[in-house]
Image (cartoon, rainbow, N blue to C red; front, side):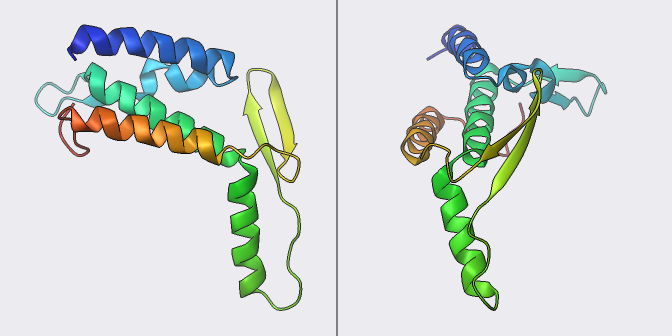
Amino acid sequence: MDDEDFRALIEVVAEELSLSGAPDLADERHYTVTNPETGEIELYDPQKRLIEMLNAFERHLAIQDRSVAETSLNVIRRMVLGEGPSRAAVELADDRGPREIDLADAPDLAELRHDITRIVHRLMEDGFRFGEDA
């Protein structure tokens, strides 16, 4: 795949992020680096940008994932005396304003998050590695 292919995928992912209620994750300002020689802000190369967008979306989903909440509550219950918490909620703020999600009623997004992670790993097989310059 070349840069044009990655740019086309970025456009598709940006549209899907918008439809999924997370348009801010596609905003270019999140995917920049300061050039140490010139001091100018530069956009990540298209492959790195796509991977970072997908990772951000996976983290966005994790916040709303019932399975993550259940795992976290189980860890807390093992660490505290007594019963510990049985429910968790998260408050998200977006262009619609703040909203609260009761994670006990949230969907299990583990499979979707796994799919995104698998896509990221496939993209990384194409030569990109974290820690390289943009």
